[in-house]
Length: 281
Ligand code: ADP
Ligand code: MG
Image (cartoon, rainbow, N blue to C red):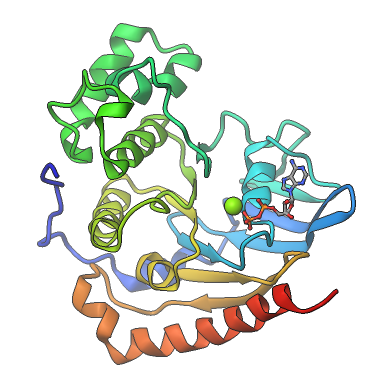
């Protein structure tokens, strides 16, 4: 695997900043959002506020509407009820299409495009001339551990590298708010841990607001300022847990008493929900 640029000496995010950022107007507000697909109620009265610079993770049993939530924010689906507000303004029928960086759960790369040209897809669509787009992508390659792989095609890459290309595409499309739907879902746990630390470093440097879906509790805690636990379908926000762990976060953190405490709280909430999915209807 190529060297990822993790800077262990990076200054800690001041935890007081994180607290301060939760006052004032949220960058994103979901108010009473509900969504049905035929007989299935995917989301029921979802309320979420996200503040500038926050890293929010969302966990919940499979099928509880996490991806639907993102699709609504990204403008790929319309809510049946409720509203989405972005920087204080109500978002119309098109959602935030073009205004957020979005990495969907099934983010397949185009097999006929090489790494560089896959990375620039979103900014090219936005109107950036191809030469200029490629130049920007080239400067970003080392940070994403892809230097030297620009002419490789997706089938020549490992799962982790493909996900980094997809992430790079999302970062190149420079928007304040990023939605990442299980971006490390396909990775083995060691690669995953490396990618988490690396993502936190990139997040710190690029100063984005991140909404991140995962089904991995450790990942949810390790990354987040706040973890949102969703209930089994119909999806609601069942629990909001603030994570008061110092940054930068290293691997030693996951065995600390505080981390284990958060894990127990979240596991209990999540297990209760997962059991419901198995209960007879
Ligand atoms: P999660 O991401 O939490 O696993 P999803 O948001 O993908 O869950 O799906 C929530 C529920 O909505 C599921 O029961 C799923 O089958 C249903 N669903 C999602 N998208 C559609 C769609 N486009 N058409 C019909 N049903 C859908
Ligand atoms: Mg999903």
